[in-house]
View 1: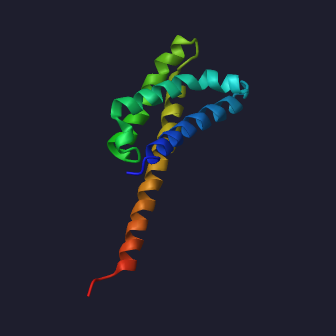
View 2: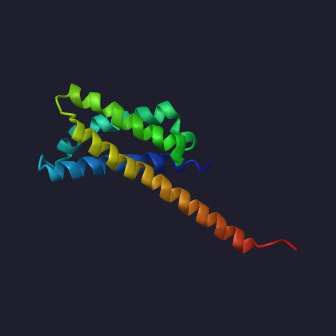
View 3: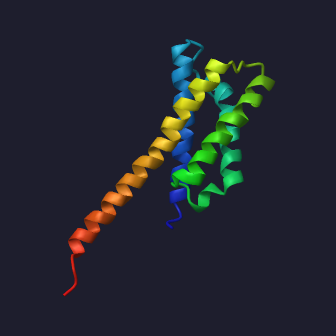
Length: 132
């Protein structure tokens, strides 16, 4: 595996979290300063990193199962108590929206990666063709 792939995958997961936080803060008009975004994002980032560590995600970062599913689950489940500790709320509606958005994005980029790699594999097989 190329050494930069795990870093790119981690960055993709971080982008998913940051987009989620930024969209939420913009939608609720709670401030988009870097400090405001960081203050809301840190529980998710901490839980995401815990998910990466727990799953050893760097070994197969683009796999949907089990890597993507468990990284996503740890991110959602781990962030909620951290939010509560900081005085932020975690009502059921927020947990549902968080779960769906992060599932769509964190698993979504992995699905796209899988489809592209399969397409490239088929394209490579067609160009090689049968051996004489």
